[in-house]
Image (cartoon, rainbow, N blue to C red; front, side, top):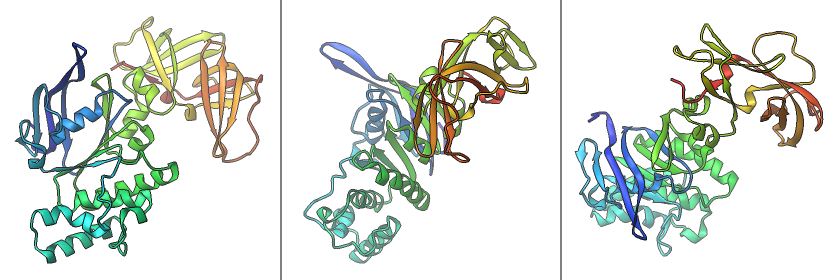
Length: 368
């Protein structure tokens, strides 16, 4: 057991019986979440992330395994006796109570002294930027303000961990992006462990210290946002986190830790590989769209990866233009070009183009 962990799962798994068949919602899972960490469970619907959070909260009983909170076995402890609070997408505010009364509710139930309640509620409303709105009812507040009230109510009791189940899902895009920044600021300010469930990879990348990407009840990859984005461990992670171009083929040669995949005259993909990869070994490679340069002129230097192709689609996104290129190798690659220097498109549909990138931006999937 890790003494530094706020939450630890040891072999935790969950099975449901559906129409007489056993379904493994969460496969045996070992996981340690550090004290003061912003940790996200990320994955598509049905991957097991919410069930995992509900087992941490005590709303679901594990089929097997042990749940620890600050080193204490709480597997069979009821939710109200676990020192965690949960925030839901629906906010679950009391509509007939004011902001102050909603936030103070838990403290009043615990019979905390009135002066202490005023102090703690005032501090928490300041942290969530709601000072001056104490008398407003939920119906007099925007969705983002209601979310802040729900956060303040959950945090004012001083839990050891806060569990957030897709709390921003009901907000519009711009407000959701603002609240991502606010949530991270609040987490840093209060200094407690946040466990965040989401299917939105942008949210997870923006806020998290570490991310567990889940699929079919298991963790496909666990790491920092940068590690998961730049170095996807599986094909699923590469496709689920952002946009990724996937190429495959046998290593034609391996020299000084660089494998070369060849597709035709003058076409090659250079990939850094670990010791043990040999010529002829099959490789699957991930290349992010923003790492690729697109041009209509043949590259002057021989270094790096080079593929040729024909532009099939051009989509303008304001900050960038996205190109889809059908390569001579038969793969459709996507290229993101930042509109930093010119408002003109680099190419049009039907143009023959060259795609180039450095070896360090090719990442071999599943090779360790």
